[in-house]
Length: 262
Image (cartoon, rainbow, N blue to C red; front, top):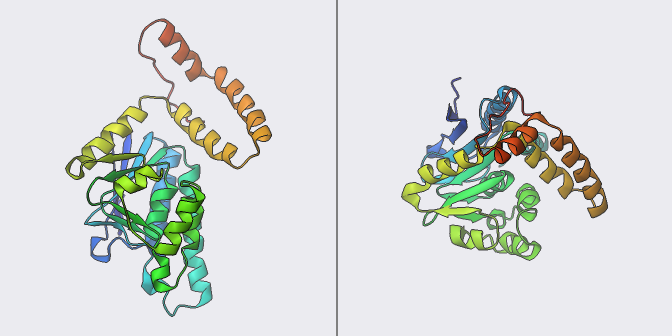
């Protein structure tokens, strides 16, 4: 499928979605986000890949939302823009694939939100930067706060909001926003290799791991254990878990049933 604002390809069970508006620093507008949503939903329905990498063309990963879709716009239009942002984050959370944000440059405001909303983040060692920069414009990063506050300690999130500072990849790794920091010139290669490592497991196991993680994080400890108990029981009688345990005992490679992730 041809896209206007982005590129998408699939290889070796990995999907690669590239934000492709470098002349606008990959700023997110309503139509851009709708296109990303459509692509992710299509990939989620087909489930031909197990992992999706979201990366960007140019020197900036994403400069946030397009200011021209906010400045001097009516309340209804701005609300519509951020409803679409909410829809995008919900899509990222709910499709079966593990989604990796591959950040090669600045990810600020809504760009930091997009990265933080993904399941995992890799970053280029020297050029990647992360920040919630809204206060520069006297415009609080309310939606980015949702994803970032669930990824980093509370005081660090508040610091990011109040200072509007851009943090390096190593700094972001230290406060647990970033999972892996790779050399800039090997970011593509090493992120793809990491995605292939994740894709060694079955579709059903990847999806259940993602589903359980986000579901239990919203529960009390008591609720989470009861939910997790049931999920462990269901996984224990599944075809792929049976195959996985059997292959381990027989010292062979498993042959997954990849007909469905559910």
